[in-house]
Length: 206
Image (cartoon, rainbow, N blue to C red; front, side, top):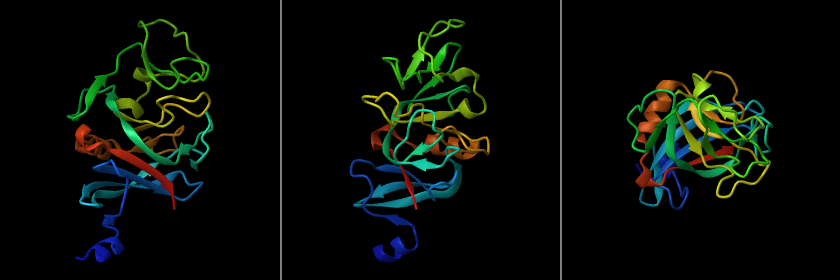
């Protein structure tokens, strides 16, 4: 098929993010909590679809281009995926660094904290110095059986702009702002991603 025919069939995406060789594309109508998710691989100047579209869950208030902490929305834009993947369950065979969550593993969601929007470990049983809606990651199942970090509001994090935006296991309901997939499909996606391919995720309204 020609480039034009592939594009018309929805199997080709041009140009896509400049630096990425793998792309996760999430598309939804504004206000919707259900999205279409597909994966793409660069070939030359364009991206060819690898898998999907699959049904994904978004934040309980849909998409937003002006995300704020606690508003329940999923931020639009293009973001890198974090260098470490996490999960309560053992490493499912990902190519990224993998941290199996243990007691004391938190995500700091306190806008007033110097470590806002980062992974933090404190002694098991200790109350962390940060507050807000910070999450005890090892306790949240099935969502955090496996997850990848979407690097929204990172490097540096702006207080109040939102935190803990992940690609995690679905509960078949709207999320607090993350993107979620059924576990089998999420594991398939996480295994496919390669650090050297500079994978990115684009979240956009249609």
